[in-house]
Length: 402
Image (cartoon, rainbow, N blue to C red):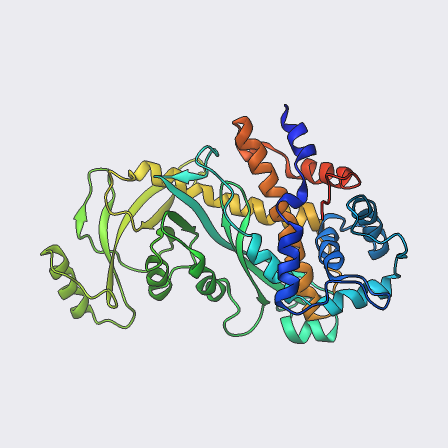
């Protein structure tokens, strides 16, 4: 069976099951059955996901795409009539964003296997943190809730995700404003770090490091591989045979004398207070093909170079760019470049964004599964073509299986 056949037959909702939808609805007390002429909650949930798959269609056009599959699976009553756009808007408002958020959190699990190419490094599953912003309709509610960047025309929402590098699926997300205290990517990262597990390796670009955040991530049991900017001195505790070296990371506010004393203690092999200092390994290398000879400085929790040599970690770090690719798939290939979201209110913005994350998760998981089974890197499967294929096959019974 060819890869394209697997994608055609790979049911989208094998990743977004009806059971998961019903559980999410039930947790928030939303009515699962149609009463009084309103759309049932499970149909609205699938509609929210379909909004991301058919970003160019209006509400009624998107719902028409779902009616055929829902009828085939006996989840659409023949006596029902298609509601107007106003009726669909009211149905979205009744559902709210909480059940869609819960659905995303339930399905968002790693999908890459040991056979998935470029998904693991030093036997650790590669994950990364990064953010993206979305333009929103310029309503007073959206502007008040999310804010506008300096000189911006539209309000914007910031979405920070924890993503599995090999598959591009998001394992967690935080949605918030773009202006004001505590609205940056680092603040959102502090919440997402709780999703880390032993056996993962978290890759972060420069800008995420703080001593507190590093310690929180280390204490999950996951390993770290973070890039540092030119922000602090890194004393040498011990040199490794591969050109890397072990260093100390100090808590903020420590005096130079206290740092020197801790360095002496570390070299002597004494036990150190983890609230004041942490060990890390430094890997430095140049990027020469850019013409400027940029120096890259990486910090890792893997202290033994036999587990992960410096060259392996340097190659591994550049898998972080898979997260950039994942962001582009959501913003440019699902939503479309330069387009604003549909939602006029903050709750509906959050609902719509979680719908995008669910749709992207389902398509990316399908790509990863099919690519792994055929022995190719998931990167070689074009996301845009897969989305087009999913759109074309949604009209069949294998497309949306409620």
